[in-house]
Amino acid sequence: MEVNFLRNRNNLIFYFDCDLDHHNVSGLKEKIDKVISKNRPKNIIFDFSRVNFMDSSGVGLVLGRYKNLKSSGGDVKICGLSGEIKRIFMLSGLQKIIPTYTTADEAIVNE
Amino acid sequence: MGYDNEMTTIFTGISENEAFARTVIAAFVSRFNPTVAEITDVKTAVSEAVTNAIIHGYCKDTGMVEVMCAAKNRDIYIEVKDKGVGIADIDKAMTPLFTSKPDMERSGMGFTVMEAFMDSVTVESAPGCGTTVVMKKRLLG
Image (cartoon, rainbow over all chains, first blue to last red; front, side, top):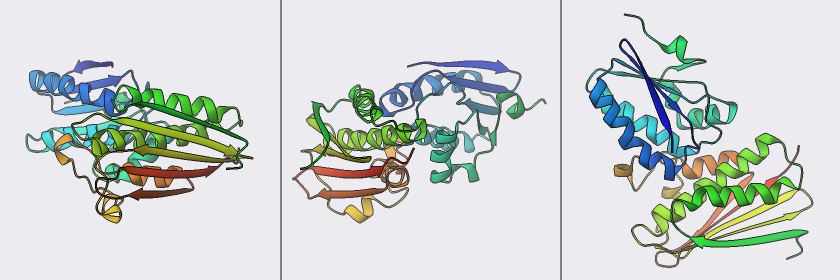
């Protein structure tokens, strides 16, 4: 179970380094929420470029953070999606509400 | 059953075994020379079905999950079976975005993903009688 993060001004970028299944995601949520509440960023980016496998648990992870942050005015973005991961996000309809980028650099907001 | 090859694995329904289940299935299916995309499709569908067995079938209890995989020519058959609580309304359970566990931040996409990634998905279940998910996929690669 691995997730690393990088703070860049108002951006908080999370890099996943593990399979995103129900088992791993259960532990990651708490870890991510702690980092978010400590840093209180305006812009949160989830980078999937190092993820080899994801099932619908990954959708639940992103959707849950989106719901939590919506009330506080934070933005959630996703990037680095492989073909299979993109397909799962498209099936869920999540891409209609969460902006998708090729790389984290493109998703970063400089303000 | 007339399959060319068949395997069954039975394991404890704990979340650590989700990765085990999809790895075993990937190893079995890989000998039929699938494409990388086909292997990922099968792994994802199995991961969804096994996760359902663990978190919905057994809820807070722990039981055994049985995964059978068989092949005939390039047709792959997979059964994921639990002896848990069962499903009262299968159509509702298979509705996209429906989840009985919103508190766990489940997306309600499990069956939708299975149906999208496999050629067919059928569910046999009744309250108190467990659930069996049967999935088929023809390898084209």
